Image 1 (cartoon, rainbow, N blue to C red):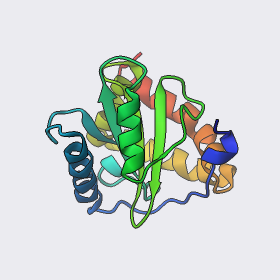
Image 2 (cartoon, one colour; image 1 turned 30 degrees about the vertical axis):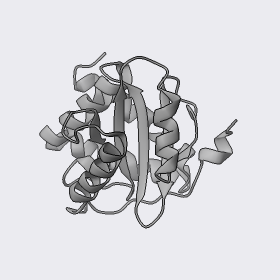
Image 3 (cartoon, rainbow, N blue to C red; image 1 turned 180 degrees about the horizontal axis):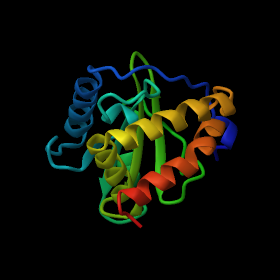
Length: 175
């Protein structure tokens, strides 16, 4: 069983990198081919700040995998670990399995129920940030403040920006 200490890691923010969508696409294809699914099926989504052009971000690509029903099949989780991902379980977020890959490129995989709360909130937040420059600016400001308050550690950073994320999700009209 993983502890919060297992999930916590140093983090930093960098300016948006226009290569991130291509890096995501490469990993999306790698995952899709490993499971024999069509890469453009919509089951894999680029989420998080690296999916929002112009937004500062941790240089870690977040990939959301949607499954039908919960919990996800063990075969899927085993397959992701076979691709080099470390399974950290729910990592404090019920209804989401969090996996990370720290190699030449860094990735987080979030396995959630397709069309469930995590799925809809992540997509709504991403789309809202892509569409609204004021929302991007507000989030960038919150991220910088959270990095300062969080001392460069993932869990403290995430907690420090949680209220801003919740407000942005509400602004995206998702409840």
